[in-house]
Image (cartoon, rainbow, N blue to C red; front, side, top):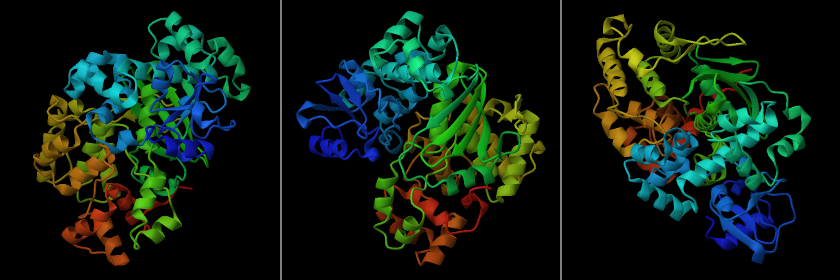
Length: 489
């Protein structure tokens, strides 16, 4: 979008928050860069330059605005919608792969050379993978500086910097303030955190309807791994350097996020996965405008706009749970999953009580004796085949997954039909166009609304909803009184 100068100028002059994260405005006369909705007086159009990423602004020598804090904008919705190599690279960078494995590790996961990855990212985002990861480290460092009382040296390494000197230089360059000055400017109420415990505000593009989002997560919560407590969805997280516990609560203009981490180096990854879980980088205006063109869906959208697709923090976990949920009720699926968690999950300590385990990894589940599974023989075969293929790495589910290839691999497994593959594509792979024409809830809603109820006819009708059919499913499901559609009390 940053190449459409006229449109960008209009967005800046109207301070339109819908475009935050789509592009950044660099002001040549002041040397700063802002989000489109910056409250400052808009500069003259001749002094504006539009860049696709915060990293590109930093590479061009601009520093972050102290009023609008552009580094805290929601992420671009493009990286969730698209499935090409640039989008997959951006999802991996957000997941901290460059910090842990370097650019060669990023390229190896994507199946390209480092030169190809750097060239494609530079062409589209104005910055290479190292610069993009550096911008992310700077944002993490700012968060830790302003919300904890940790020593600066600890913050430097927790944010992913190789040395305290690099940390100091980066913070000064990006924010035009030394780390200690940045902490002094932070509101007192934001400080006082302790090591391993953080309170964050996760931004999103309005509107956001929390009913089906948190309702779905709470209604399907696996005891010991997830729970709804005091207005918050809580769950355990398996992270690269340790484990964590997160509590997420909906607020009118943000999601309140409370993180307890065994290792602060996991902060960036944990935040990224929470954003992905709640689909916070979506563009609800674009989605709803497209779906509203169907006169049958329009009343549903006007009644409760801004529905998101509830996703997952662990793609392999969700695939296992999708198999457990085949042809059984929500309660039965939770019971099956809870038994596996109790028998094979890794115990964790929850300071608030209630959460007891991490969901078992595929390697642990691959050793489960089939006869110990309380399910039909055919589903046992489906379960054991899936966890074995996940444990061996024959099937990889993650932010870097090639969606068409992964769909084909899943469909080749015994017991995997279109419903199972599409629900995994929707919630684990993040495909915004995944559709479930054979789902009972979707067919029931279609019948009630006067839409075609047979899978083939409904799929043909849904062609007009592309590329947002996964969101159409949320609106169709919401016509039912099932607990997944209700925000818990």
